[in-house]
Amino acid sequence: MSGLVALLNRERGDFDDGRLDRMLSTIDHRGPDGRGAWVDDAVGLGHQHLRTTPQAVADDQPETENGTVVTADCRLDNRAELFGRLPIDRDDGPVPDSHLLLAAYDEWGTDCVEHLVGAFAFAIWDGDAERLFCARDHFGVKPLYYHRTDDLFGVASEIKALVSLPSVSTTVDETRVGDYLTGMLEDKTNTFYRDVRRLAPAHAMTISIDAVSTWQYWDLDPTRTIEMESEEAYAERFRDLLEQAVESRLRTTDRIGTTLSGGLDSSSITVLARELLPDDEPLATFSGVFEDVPACDEREYIETITRRDGIASTYVTVDELGLLDDIEEMLAYHDEPLTNTMHFMKWEIAKRARADGVGVMLEGAHGDNAVDYGLGLLPELVRTGRWYHLVRELRAMGDVLDRPAHRLFTLFVLPTLIPRLIRRQYWTLRGVPVGPKRSNPLLDDTFVERLDLQGRKDRLDPEGAIRKRSARRWQYRSLMTGSMTEFLEANDVLHAAFGIEPRYPFIDVRLIEYSLAIPGTMKLKDGWTRYVIREALADSLPDEIRWRPWKTTLNQGFADRLGEEMDRLDALAANPGDLDRYLDIEALREARAEFADDPMSGGASALWKALSLSYWLDATETTPSSEPRVPQR
Image (cartoon, rainbow, N blue to C red):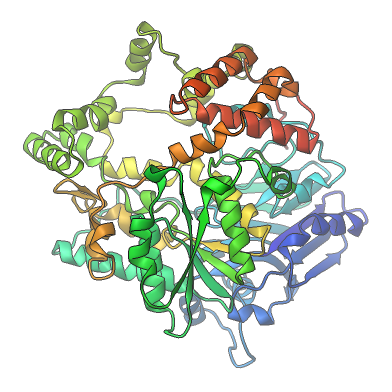
């Protein structure tokens, strides 16, 4: 994980390299291995070095070749394929990924992104074409933000680098505030700053003195299907792709760690990493555990993995941590309010990992999306009239989960058959909040109306004809959700604070394209969700994990930590500051009282968002605004 910045003076005037230097200084934590800069006429590129691959020893960005310059936060996983297709001399020593990227651009131009596999965000200055070319990987593992006016274009790995520019105001984009408070994160381009945008995953853009072009270079295809001769063949191919995804992410000279929760995803990553690493190279695992909340403690599953040879385990006792203990330090790195309710546990794990010399952390994040629970198969069976299969599957699930089949139908099938409008009318008749206030009952009515949050949700998350949606369409939606983008961006910032690169084997485009294309019956079979991974890792996972019906949630553990912050909630209700622009403070007081009586009543998430947003507003000294944002030209 490195850091990049780039500036283009679109007026062709003298380049102020002081601005580039300030941008680099704001993300100095991303460059423990040094920094570099390149300036020529109206353009400047800068780089903060964090070398996490063996080849990075030869990396010296910004890298220049034949008038083309690159600064990249980049790890390419299809190096062997690229070497076979590009004219690269490998006799001069290690070839860093930035060299491969430049060679790919030289060969294919802006189409090079269609040939790259891995995690990347980069800016390339093409001196001949006099344009800056920027791109971001398929799922947005590497973040990329930009600021654009008629006079200036800037791009960077973190928002704070752009905020350092004089032309960037600290005015809050209240649309993003509404998205945050409602959990509606499908807009992958906005940020909390009106003058800073995100380049969406799988997108690229070119910027010249007088023109800007942005396009999507890749998308998943939910109509593609893969047919094999047997279940064993599907499982074997899945195993091969997952091993490939793990192995390509072991390319490092640093010590490797994994986050291990005891669920299917993190356990699969851990056992495969252990099998693929040399016997004399220990694998570090880090797990959050609970002494006072047995319902959240997973040690009985974690220890089925950590007792194996070659694993050095570390436990972080979550009960000993405070929800807001390190909030000021965190917000020195995070440029947006914290969303993850277990952020404090992840922060402590990263801190412990860095102290143990870990430089690369493998995570099982979004394995749920990549492998899929297969529940979209159930409404598809209704749509296609396969009633016998539906009843058989619901009964089998009932046996696995120890729940009545009719209850599972009500949970997983019935809601997909009822249009959104009818559901809203039903909840209204029952006196239950609908629309944005159903997502967050603390929202201020004036704020909801001013931003038309209901209309925004309908535009960004159209249900369409859900009764006609296939199982693949359901999985496609989960894979392309904006919440995944938000998680990856926040996790990048968190780990960058400690000089660690997070890597995600399940967020591998080759694995995901395969998983989406296989039949739904390989994801839900005989009552078992995520069937293909259970079969694929039959000889690696212990049965205690392989046949877990469901994973543990950490809701109670979070609620206990929030319960220790009642004084801060009281202080917030008494002095909300700018928060009263967005929230109904009387509703906040009522939610606080309800939470005190019953911490599991369901209001914990809204209270946490209120706290988190308040701390961020205070820490950043932003300027509130209710004026509509003027689109950039």
